[in-house]
Image (cartoon, rainbow, N blue to C red; front, top):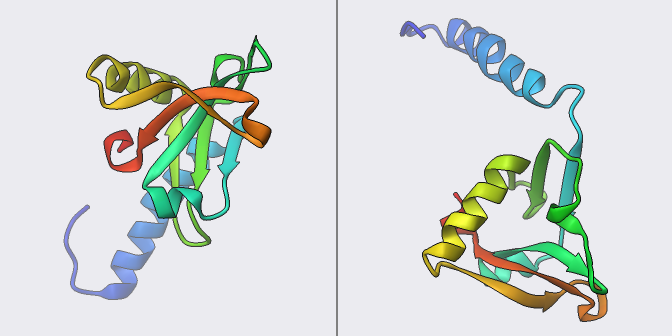
Length: 120
């Protein structure tokens, strides 16, 4: 983007490029939104389920194109599902994410606990 000191020009360019890009990124895509109240904000972690009641579930069976971790009313992480899977594998191999963690409703799920800062 060419620099221009006129805020109206910069705003228009930002809307045209930035907002149009974001809209096209998610348009006609399957999106899985994860919300855990305020737990992620308090712990600095997100939980990614892959099994429930002894069967594959969550990220292991999702058909979503994107995962959205809703951290608060004003913060969210949007990440492609395949990128998320790849990043989790990488973090587990480096010992930076903990797999096999019980969680979810009544601790019936098994998943990976990932630090938000490491996910990004």
